[in-house]
Image (cartoon, rainbow, N blue to C red; front, side, top):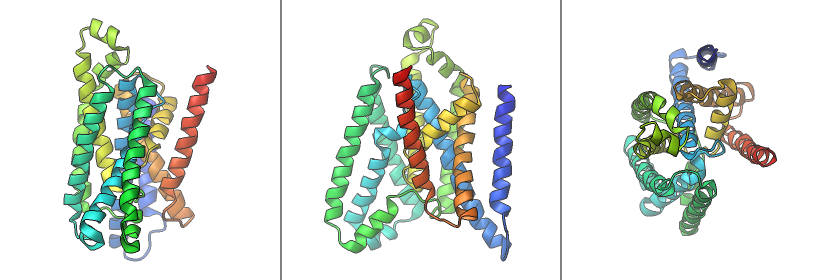
Length: 314
């Protein structure tokens, strides 16, 4: 039953991808397919990375309310964009090679994430309030620094920061896609290798250690993968705070199992489906270009609030 449901998710992803590429295909087909293929690959990679990362993060934190985006990745991304424009100017920022800028941003976010995660989960992930408060405080601090730098920019440079601060799936280069695809494939392979041990870790630290699992080492390995997955997706298109929560929650409903060998691919496929389906509706059917990230964040935020109230009433 579980295998069949994951297979149906994969088939739905293939059918939706075909529709995204071929819907009302007119004019210079080669050029149009190249543009659509690049955007489709971006949507799939970002959705898959975010969905898989959220399942890992929730397992480590032993809480299905949490998502890596709550730890301040969006604020860190905006601060980095603002700092680059402040130091280099609008012209210098635009002159940064796409691949080099992507690698630098992703590397810095991975480093910061690993440090923050190590501090947060040093004594386990049971203290959810501490994790959330740390993420909120970190986000406020980085947003404050970003706003301070933005006040020192001239209007033209401020518009560059504003444009770079929102998730966009249209300005991705083939070099960035190649780097992201390679990193994502390696990370998902490591997730698959780690899945049986994650099943044991989900039982809790005392039980997992009693069964012979090196729990602390596994947690740090999982957090390193979370940091890598979230960093590459954020550096590629920008922040999508609640996409992971949507993908993980829907995946748990569609594939009701505790086995990470099925949960991780289900969440990756669900995240990709959300983005591709949303982009298809807004771009192909409604003729919109920039509303997907806003809608995803809106519904993700509503889901987060609903899950909180659901936990309080149980």
